[in-house]
Image 1: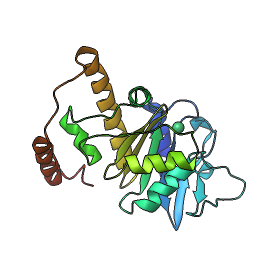
Image 2 (image 1 turned 45 degrees about the vertical axis):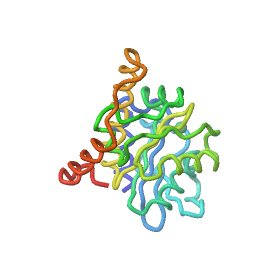
Image 3 (image 1 turned 180 degrees about the horizontal axis):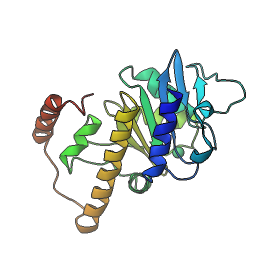
Length: 209
Ligand SMILES: [Zn+2]
């Protein structure tokens, strides 16, 4: 599991979704979860750099977990169907987050998040319990949210699923950003049209919640 978390962290960097030491990821492991370390460049990480944490916030000796461990812990504690959490400062998701924009159903692929709107959580200082509380609320019945003036969070039933949601979310945010250059009020799919997409996805499997 430590190796899988490292591979996903490397993929996020290769895809340009995280740069430098920004962003962090976690995966359920044993009685707790593994989270990426604090302030370490991806190229310096090994499987042993990953930090095993318990749900009470305690962690392996001689290691420092990501400063955002609280929302990783709270999401994994609150959402039994979710086993992996990815946080990025990726360009287009962060652009939308800095505009405090929810992403409405302008494209049917919004349904990959499990809802018809990707909510933007209100701003709170990084690393705080308040940020975690805001994130958890914005993720209600959804696998993705934006964090105002900060970035985004994507969830998955495993790390590959969380990465797929991350990639799709960044695509959606880039598409929406482009659309807004031309039309500030683009046509949206209706509730009925989105419910048909959810039905279609049930048979498709890949994006099942
Ligand atoms: Zn961050």
